[in-house]
Each structure stands twice: as structure tokens, then as C-alpha cells.
Amino acid sequence: MDIRDKHCLYQIKQKFGGSVKIKSDINYLRYRLHHKKGLLELINSINGFIRNPTRLIQLKQICDKYGLNLLYAEALTYNNGWLAGMIDADGSIYLNLQSDQVFISIGQKNKLLLDPLVPLYGGSIYMQKQTEAFKWVVYRKKEILALLEYFRHAPLRSAKKNRVFLISKYFLLKDLKAHLAAPNSILGKEWKLFLKNWESYSG
View 1: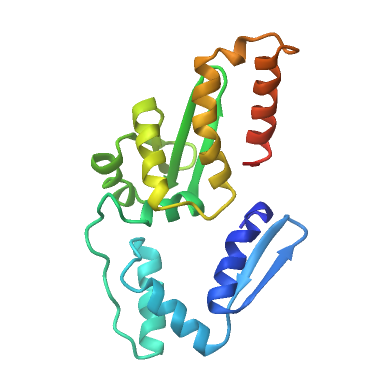
View 2: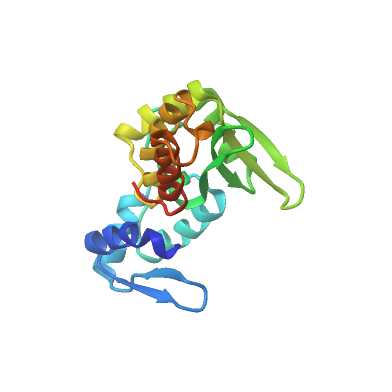
């Protein structure tokens, strides 16, 4: 994970043990778990919640190794924390200043993983020809605000949570037309501070 998400990995380390090390050449962190007790606890924690077919096959191999039964995930429901986990792992929260819109998205090679999100959370799915992948995107204000309510009971764990905290501030400043205010005005300074916090993933 990105180095800014170290808090997320240290939460996992605190629960299951293991180690977190930085890969200085790419500024990323890697979590590793070797001891059997922690591995079994981790397997039992995720068994029954994996939806990615590739990861499911890998989990099956691990379950076979330790004599465990593989459990399959139930149909996705609105309050399930899976969406939050996917955004932490494969999602983006970004701001387009030209269109004045907030976007929340998830990219995946397998479209079937994204299909259940549309009836539950809204948004649309687009094909990305350059990467031969698919992207689920939410940008309508009503749907973004609904997702903020979802994140209240299924909070993000990565640094992206700080952008979630800033979305309400963005809508407030936009309504006040702070983005159009003179740079040295009170609103202009508030807008500048907001953009600084957004870019640095600061709450």
C-alpha cells in the first residue's frame, strides 16, 4: 500500500501480528505474516467474504493446506463493508475542478465484481479500453451524499478516509462560491486551505 496508508496496515498488524516494511525504491509499504497462529486467525476473518474469483482460488489453496472449509460470500447488501474495503484497496476519490464534481470510483478487470454496486449505491460502469478494465464511478451529488452516510457505519481505513471527511466541506464551499472568491478574501483563503488538505489527504 501507499506509504500514506501506513495506519491501515498497522491496524492489521496489531490484530494479526506480522511485519510492515517500506519498499524505499517505490515508496510503498508491504505487510507480511508468517506465523501459523496469525495466519489462521486472518484466514478465518476473511473466509466467507472474498468475492474476487482469483483471490477465491488462492484462498481455497490455503484452506486446503490447513484443512479448512472454504466459505463463499453471500449476496452483497447495502450495509456490507465490502464496498469500503474495495475503495481502500482499488478505489479513488478525486476532484475535477473543471467540472466542479467529486468522483468516487473503483477499477477492476472483472466487471462482475462491480455489477452489484449499481443497484445498491448508484453510479455507472465504464469500460477503459487503454487498460482493458472496468471502472465503477459515482459523481452525482445525491449519490455522493448517500455514500457519505454509508461510510458512517462502514468507514474507510486508508488515507482516503480524509478525503471522505472533506467532501461535505467541498459542497459547503462550493455553495458559497468560495472557488470563485478573490484569493485574499476569507472565502478565497478557505478554498486554498481546502485544496491543500485535499491534495495532502489531510482531514
